[in-house]
Length: 306
Image (tube, rainbow, N blue to C red):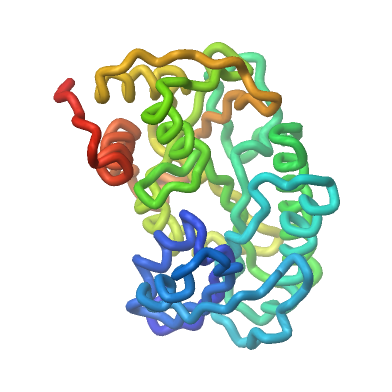
């Protein structure tokens, strides 16, 4: 689908954006929008085959972009908005701005989050796409992602823009940057693991390279009004079980630290729709954890616990 096409990729220097660029940049023309504030990040994007542009989509700086993109992959977001205004600017208003600018596209893919689902009495419940939404988590994050979905839906209906909303679970991989990656890094450094709001709290981690397998099947779902698809791994696992596994690999007993204000609740997702379109996930969460440890902490010897 993407071969030979012109693609706008926002959040191009993020964990998912880099994985997608590695997969597709050789076969299509990718314009990558990000801040590129880290030294060398622009050069790294160019090496991946991306045309990098430092544009603040939250401030409506899209005039520098053409409007003739075939596909839009909108991954840009504020992961930890410091205020209501910042959350709305990045996670809601920017969605509408990008959709309007690229309204002639064949399909618009909007990255949402598993954190939009309304909490369930059973923390093991795996949310299907039709489950209720409504959650306040991590300051303004979950609430602003819900408004972002509303912006994507309204833009699709008003502009006639085929759209798909992809609700991502915890993404894990060597590139790092995700909450699970940061927690693993912290555990290796300190031995501490943040306790969760629920005991236990469940999730459905997805390996960063496996996300690229979902791009074209998800774009094929794009419609007006938008389709919704869960981006999650095949397995539901408790947060604490992940770190018991990490502890066994590095031969270290996890030390539970006090829960932060934004302690993570359950966010397990039903992968049935994703599996029907793209097949089984290629990487288990155990394989993903081992890969992260090997790539990000090469000095740590891993035990063979098979």
